[in-house]
Structure formats: C-alpha cells, structure tokens
Image (cartoon, rainbow, N blue to C red; front, side, top):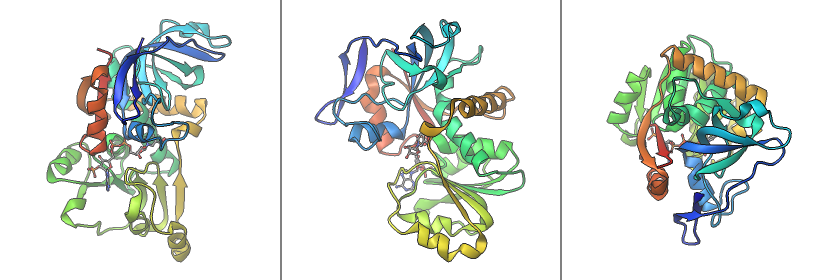
Length: 313
Ligand SMILES: NC(=O)c1ccc[n+]([C@@H]2O[C@H](COP(=O)([O-])OP(=O)(O)OC[C@H]3O[C@@H](n4cnc5c(N)ncnc54)[C@H](OP(=O)(O)O)[C@@H]3O)[C@@H](O)[C@H]2O)c1
C-alpha cells in the first residue's frame, strides 16, 4: 500500500510500504478520506509526541471501512464505516487503529464529511463541555477560522452561547458570522476584544495567551486545546495568581487522553447536532493523498478556513 512519509528534506512523499496488520485490540481500516490538521505539521517537524520528523507518517484521523480485526477486538466491526482517531499514521491507504478509538460514521454521511467533523468536532465539543459552557454565556474563540475554531463557533452558538470569534480577515469574519458568531475581532487590524468572557477556547496559545487569560470574568474558564502559535512566552501561572480574586480556571486537554467512553459520548453529541442541521462540516479544500505536501503547506501558512480533507484517490 502507499503512505505519505516525511523525508529527510522535510517533504512528504508517497511511497510503497508494507500493509499493516491489526494487533491485539486493533482494527484494520481501508481508508476513504483523511482529515489534515495543524497537528500534522507538528508531526512533520518532529514536534508531536512520538513523531520523529523524517520517517513519520502524519495523519490524525481517517474515515473508511473496517476490513479485519486483531485478537480481542469486536468482530462485528468488520464491514462498518468508521471514523478512526489515530494521532499519527493516517496519510495512508490502510491504517490500524485501536478498537476503542473508532466511531461509527452515520449511514447517510460521506467519508469526507466525517473527517471534516472528526477530531476537530470532538475537540470543540470537549472544550465547551469541559468548560461547563451554558446558554447565555459569553464565549471567546481564538483561531476561530481554523479547523477546530469553525466547529467550536457552531457548537457554542447551537448551545445558546454568545460567541466572539478572533480571526484574521474581514472575509473570515463574515463567514464566522454566518456560522453563528455574534462578534468578530480581526486580530490583524490591531483590534482587541473589549468585553470579558465566561469561557475562552484557545487553539492558538503563543505570546498573547496571558492577555486573553486576563479577559476572563469572575469564575471564568480558559480551555487551552492547541498551540498553533507555539507555547506561551510569558508566565501564565503568574497571571492566574494575580487574577486570583476572579477564581479563574485554566484547563488544558488533548483528545489523546480522552477515554473511549468519553469519545463515544462526544461523537454522539456531534452527530446529533449534525443530523439536526445545527452543525455542518466546513471543507476548505478537498485534495487527494498524492497532494499531501500541498495540504501540509496550506496548513503551515494558516490559510485554510475550516478543514482540509484528502480523498484516497
Ligand atoms: N486538543 C487536542 O486534542 C487537539 C486535537 C487536534 C489539534 N489540536 C491542536 O489545535 C491547534 C489548532 O488546530 P487546527 O487543526 O484547528 O489548526 P488550523 O486549522 O491550522 O487553525 C489554526 C487557526 O489558528 C489561527 N492562527 C494560526 N496561527 C496564528 C498565530 N500566529 N496567531 C494567532 N492566530 C493564529 C488561524 O485562525 P484565524 O486566521 O481565524 O485567526 C488558524 O486558522 C493546533 O495546535 C493543533 O495541534 C489539538
């Protein structure tokens, strides 16, 4: 089978590799669509836990059909269409995944839509749920035009929150309004949010993290679920101590440590919203596996609005 492997030059190239065999508790998935995300850029650079840069295969999620199961994995998964949450290895024609990290694709959905929601919708749903977001609360979303951001905007709006989206152009702002944002902050215009918030969902981190943490209201919750701009450069703990009187909460989470039960519950929430028409996948571009380098380059530039999806061919 073919997989897109990171070369020593840093480029990814489609090469022939041995077909994988499912081990204990694993399933073998024949890939139909691959979700490309910023995390794949980190894998390419060797910055993602467990990735080495050269020799790695990026790809945190795929959708496809289960072909076989390993010892101890449920046999009734064979033949089912699933979303498989992987971490790495998804830029390939076949993958093995832990049976506890595959989720059913609704019957009427295509594989591209499933991965366009996929990991990003699970992160968005988790972020808002872990923050205990309720209707009427003010939610600020950083990286709102990105893969996770567009879905967090929609889910927060669907749950009755008042959303402020931080993004990087008037055009992106316009699209975010259409997805449910009540307010737009264009970070490239020098504008800054002029309100305080019950919840901040941050997929960006980087040097401005402290200034966003300061925007929490009393009993506010800050959910750090990504770092598209790298690690914070200042002491955010010092900000928390200074704002102690507001009882702020700082949460960080990764889907990697979410239990199979939590993943399944979250996916049920996501697919229910989707089927009710309250959440729709936002595809920036549909490419094929042979365009993997182009997908990574788009992500590296922060160009996509929504999700980049690669079809197998
Ligand atoms: N917690 C988890 O389990 C989990 C799972 C998957 C991914 N992640 C992480 O979440 C982060 C976002 O992933 P994604 O797939 O949504 O990425 P993405 O599609 O590339 O979106 C990131 C967005 O952040 C904004 N941004 C990028 N660079 C920025 C900068 N220097 N300053 C301010 N804003 C910037 C841009 O949005 P605007 O142009 O709209 O501002 C960009 O579209 C990544 O760090 C990824 O590794 C976490």
